[in-house]
Image (cartoon, rainbow, N blue to C red):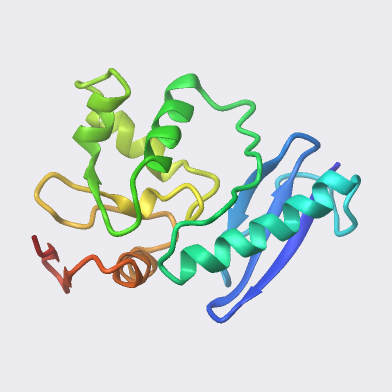
Length: 172
């Protein structure tokens, strides 16, 4: 059974999904593709899950304010490839207000020729915002893609103080 936790923010209601091992997915508000990852319950199965819900809510609010979260919940990436997990761990090391390119992340995980696969891994990130794929941009300083849409990417980067030039990408 998967536990579903609703997180109200000034930006709308996010939905977090937890397994017995940790956070498995975070959905943006009003996501038209939002679909439950399996049978869900709104009641936590354990005290750990109840605590994880509160940790996730606080971490999300800190991220939405452009700050680094004090604490993150455990992530459950079971079923995802080692490469994707390596990319997601590399994204966790990008500080708020900083960006890296897909190529830089590919090199960081020891796969310098896997830039496109890195982009695919970013797009497959099941825990956007907390695992900050919005901080990964294309080599030409263009924004690239984002699972929550480019408006969300612009919003998150702007809140972190990354200078954006609409239509052109990042201003260095």
